[in-house]
Every structure is written in structure tokens, then in C-alpha cells.
Length: 581
Picture 1 (tube, one colour):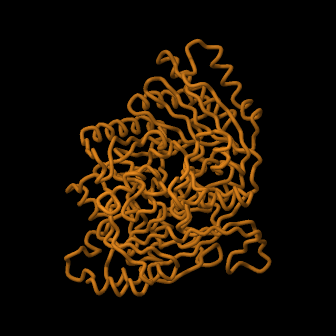
Picture 2 (cartoon, rainbow, N blue to C red; picture 1 turned 45 degrees about the horizontal axis):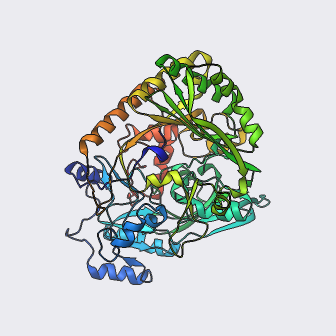
Picture 3 (cartoon, rainbow, N blue to C red; picture 1 turned 30 degrees about the horizontal axis):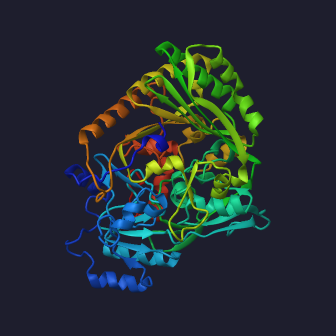
């Protein structure tokens, strides 16, 4: 299943000896100091840093454990915007046998690149681990670490459009393109509001509106319409970044091009602290819409035939720039359709599905347990909470806290992500040859058998097979694994459980259930990837314990990324789980 429907509210994972061992690996086996160790900064050292950054340094706390903030926290703990506003919390709460959301030793609420440059220089001198957070959604735990200095960019959230952007250092005569300057702390709803709702242009961002723009692009960045507009990384035109030496650099295809390339999918936080991004914007399609429905088969044979027909239908009618999002496959012979489309009206969208509807209607082995539904709406209103309110639609949920920006909205299904406790999370790109007639039945069998172990989803927008040549060419010039160019979908197999943040009433960690979930996920992954041995994985949505992660995330680009790391961060100031080292 996809992350929006599968991952449940989370529980804090107590710090196990295993987790401590993993944390030592992540932080460089003693590279960084711990409180109490010789050389750990004194209060005077921290105070000196605080003065240098204008008093924007503080000690973060879990608001659920602070009597002064507990009532407010309990009232808002399912609000992604509230959680993102708390430097002592993270959007993802924990990962079984890996990490738990833990406040840092100090947090810098940065307001400028100079604030960040000062902090990076100070941390390098004092051997304090750095953690970078914009949105706080990292499944790999990169958004938090105890005994660290958290660089929190949330206040750096401006979004400004420009009609004819030309990168710094570009050759004379370089034509300008429509673009948007986006602060590192902006969430995608900030960008969608400024660029689409207000500006009438399209910007390629994430499906979840509270995801941070910087981490999204640094990890590669798939949106709902990546087959149409490319990845977030491939639309990045320029970035301002603070590197390990404390320099503020403006990088693009003309200035520090290798660093710029590395930032386009090289893994969040591995090469520096991004402070501003400039993204290409696109002409906005007239309409954006959705398709949903649930099909139920009455026998195992019928289920296998249904899966094969859905894959065939996707290949013939939907594997193109208009379509994205997912189909979910379940062990009870059920398939959930959760697709989005752009550039089509109601009639065109329904026509694309009519062959499948006719096929189902002609066979009594199938029924719609949730009726088929397809609807388009004006693209400019897709991220406009007022539109949904005015039309009595309940897909979107506002940030209803007093004083919150009126445009802040999250998708109703995404509320389940708050504080997620992951039992297991895996992903695999599936190559296009699996859709050929001679391979399709084998793929369908693998999907059916894997879904019996653990329900999962194929995310068709997270593979670029079916995209235009221009889209593919731009994606080819990023650090992502080139497998993505030929992948028709990303399979995501994941599970999470009924858990809570530390301090939430009823918090209980069920290790036995978590282990069963992890085991089921690994069995499903093993079965599915028999048809795609050695399949690559998507950095931002992948296994904490990913085997051969360099090859999985970056493929043939791994050695080039390692060279960029040696050049721009030779001492390993920036270290993240499964990152470039």
C-alpha cells in the first residue's frame, strides 16, 4: 500500500542497544563528540554561538513532555503543520530497530544563509554533529539526532516567481526561463500557493503538501505528475548552498557544476545545507483530476487475471505524461485505484478507463466494492483549500490553528503520516520490459504472490518510462539511479503500526507486531523482486537497512558522487544514513 493509507500514527521507539550501535555507525564511529566527553562545547561556547546568530539558538523540547505546552500539543498532534513547527518533533516518529524521534542538543532557527554558515563553521570546529531539517519527513531519520546541532530552516520559506531566470555565471545570450525562487524551509503547499493558485504556473513538487522543498529535490523528488513534468531534481536550475568550509555558494550548470549535479538527487544533506532553490516552472494545464475505485475478485484465478489486465490497461492507456499515482494490491484479492491525471477533462479521463470498465462489466467474477469515480477540476484550484470548502469536498484539511496561513492545507489521507512508526519500508523500480506481453503474466503472478505476504502499491509517477524525451533528458542529467528512466513504476512495500510519540497517552510499543510486519514486508519484497533482481531504490522512500545502497540509489552515478563528496566535504562534516561518504 502507499504511504498515505498504510502508515499509521506512531510510537516512540525506546533507545535500544541496537539503535545505539546503528547511531554510532551513522555518525562516523566517534567522529562527533557526545555531552560529557572531553571537548564537548561548554555553556559559554553555546552562548557565543547564540550571540553570533542573533539569539536564534535554543534547546528544543518534545512539547508533549513539557507541562507548559502539553495541552496544546495534545490538541494538535495530528496536524502536520503543528508538528512541523516543533523543532523537538519530526513528521516521521520512529523506525523499528533503527531510530526514534529525539530532540537535538540545540536548534538554530535559521533566517539567513549567513546564520547557517556561522553554525557550520562552529560545529566543524567543536566536532558537533549537524542535522538539517526543513519538512522533517525523512524515513531514514535524517531529520533528527540526539547530541546534534539542528539547523532548522523553516523560517526561510519565501517563494518568489520570475519570468526570465538566467543562472549566475551563464554564458552571454543565455535565454531566461520562467522559474520560482524557493526558500529552503518552504513546504510544497507554500510553493503551490504562490506558483499555481496565485501565479497560474505549474511547479513540480511533492504529493504531500508539508514535505520540505529542499529535501525533496536533494533526494530526487517525485510528484504526482513526474511523467509529465519530470522530477524535482531535474527541474532545479540553481541552488544557494553552504558547504563544509562555511562558504555560501550559488551553484548551477555554470558555477560549481559538479556540486550542483550532486545536489540533484545525491541524497538529502550529504553535500551541504541548501538555503535557496530555483525551480523551473511550467505552463499550467487546464485541468487536474483523480480516479478512484476498489475492485474485488471472487477467486485466486480471477485475481491473477485482474492484475494482469490492470497492468495491460496501464501499459496501453495510462503509461504517458497525463497519468500518475498508484494502484494498491491486497492479499484479500482486492485492488484500490488511486490515480491522478493532468491535461484531460472528465470525458477524456473516463475514455482512458472505458476498456477496463467494459472488461470488468463483462465478467461476473468481479465487483466494485467502492464504485469507480473520475473527476477533473480546474488545475489552478487543485491546491486551493477555499475551492474544496466552497464545493463541499472533503479531500483537503486546513491548518485550523489560530493565525495559521489561510492557504495551508493537507490531504485528508496524509493525516495518518503524523508521527509514523515504521515497521519496515522498501522500494524497487520495475523495468519496462516487464510490461511486454511475454513477461506480463509473470509480473502479475509476482504481484499476486507478494501481496499475499504484505499489501503494497505500484507508484506509476515514480518511474519515468512513458515520459517525453525532454523530460527524460532532464532527468538523465541528475544524480539519481539511471534505472528510473526505464522504470514504469516504483513498488513500495511498507508497513507501520498503532504507536504514538513519547508522552502521548496510551503509548505502547509492540515489538512482536513490528517484527511480524518487518518479516512480511521482506518476504513480499523478495517475491516481487524475483522478476527485477538487483532493482534500484528511491533514496527518499527506501529501506533503512538497504543492501548495497550506493548501487541501489545511484547506480552508475555512485562513483561520480563520491568524487564530488571528496572535493566539497573531504572531512565528512555532513553525514546522513545511507548517504554519500
